[in-house]
Image 1 (cartoon, helix red, strand yellow):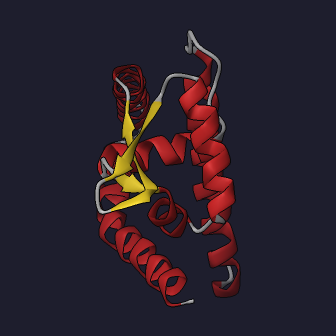
Image 2: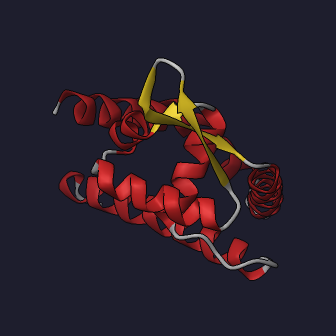
Length: 151
């Protein structure tokens, strides 16, 4: 593979793996699937309970009104609650409902099982190569994050 083809091939493979994992996980859902942006917001609120809508928009790199729309959808679906911000009554803080916690836990469990099963099908050499690539992939993700933060 030519050196100039590598970045495109890497991006294609990473996107393909992500897409295939999402598709496989959707098969076992007992409730309607969440759109990607909805799932991202739920994961973010799970990691940062009490996050403000404006901070969520910044973290997800989307417009505030887009996050507000997602919040409305997820609140109606029973996955998010809004609390008045004690420091700024015009602002709200977001929290996951028990149903959202359960859904995220289920998704993480199923994703872990799926990926473990597929990695187990690989040769020892392939597993070692993937493990060796993890630090570089984390650095790549960090650089991408820094670049987006800087813009």
